[in-house]
Length: 93
Image (cartoon, rainbow, N blue to C red; front, side, top):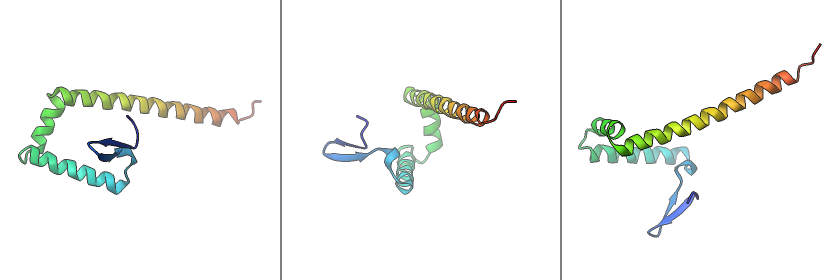
């Protein structure tokens, strides 16, 4: 369910996108600290394995690529519309 607050085991969760910049920073720090602990103080090795060899990491990369493609397409359409507006205001001879 894509709601800002989900409940699971009687706990409330806020979507990452709905957090303030400081809230996002705190979550990123928590994730990094956990990554260091989980990896035995070798986060680079764990991330290399996760992103390059793990099915979960490969799935994550593909998901991010798809989201990036969609964003890039949206930005290209916006740029096209802005340039059309710019040229449609000009008078023809």
